[in-house]
Length: 73
Image (cartoon, rainbow, N blue to C red):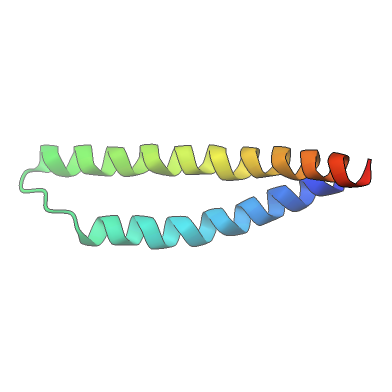
């Protein structure tokens, strides 16, 4: 369980850093010319954020739990 907790904390930190860099870069490169294109671009960014949230906040605790179980029984 300690591994899962550490995985969650590490995932939260990673999520905050990665989202700040990736989303910031994507917003700077937005070349949308119409409001519809801009809306679609922002929707895709939100989807990317959701995917990253699931992978980092749920994937890393599972990995941490597995590593803790494997190494420390």
